[in-house]
Amino acid sequence: MTLGLRKTVAAAIVALTASFLPAVSATAAEPGSDARAGNYCLANTWNTPEVRTRQCDSFDRGQYWTVDGDMIKLSYAPDYCLANTWNTPEVRTRPCDSFDRGQHWTVRGQQISLTHASGYCLANTWNTPEVRTRQCDGFDRGQHWTINGRQISLTYA
Image (cartoon, rainbow, N blue to C red; front, top):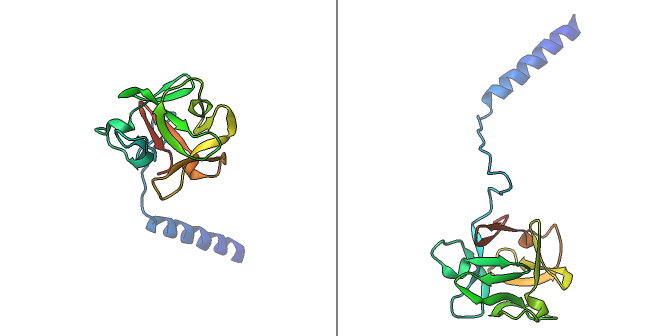
């Protein structure tokens, strides 16, 4: 008899506790998208070679990129490509040159790596605008990118 009373009281406590929890609703993101993506985009400071992350802005021409094979070109200046200065972590834009190994990128899932040095990925130094290449690390939030149309944004920012 005591065991039955304990079970009844325990069930009543659980039900009462649940009634005080806030109601939560969720909405699903489009398939293949990440609801958090799109706040900070890969950006070229227009008329300079500088590449940083900046708050995504659909009016900023330096935030529009075209993935053309294994090259990533500025959409509004297609003669300029995303480029790593070979054997350094530096990432800039330079005149497109198919012979420049630092201008060839591989997009695999949320990582963008150098095609000819696949162990090095495009990386944002978290909580800064800096963009460099670093050894690929799936746990580094600054190495997760989402390509949404012509904008390339940090997946988790």
